[in-house]
Image (cartoon, rainbow, N blue to C red; front, side, top):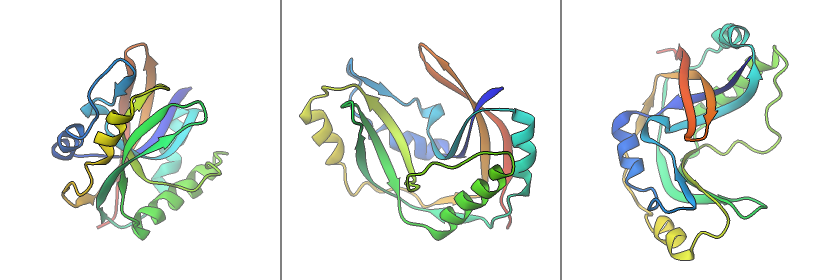
Length: 177
């Protein structure tokens, strides 16, 4: 069994732009490494890799573009904060999300109950981060990003370590022209 998730890979050039927006690396903040920057579509959890690889082959969606938008954050009930960059509303991205959920349902996967909120996580921090760090991150509104051409999605495995997660792209699924 592998810890799996489905995601869009972010090109290196955009990952570099995004890491420039990350908050300063202080003790309470864990930055996402550039190589790990992605847009999660579905977190599957522990599952049989071969079974998931095969079921995702049935996903058939046209290629599309996405646009990134302003930085924002999620606050958890325990006081931790996730810094992220959003994605403009996009019907084609939602169609891909739903097609993948439909395919995964064939192997018993149930998607999250909360509404899909496409975003790219840049950092996670523990409770008690200073307000100036939060404000500085949020003031980076109107950052300009390239429009991203989405031509594929990937199935990733995740190995959690003390140094942070290690992601491995297990399989690539090209989208239709």
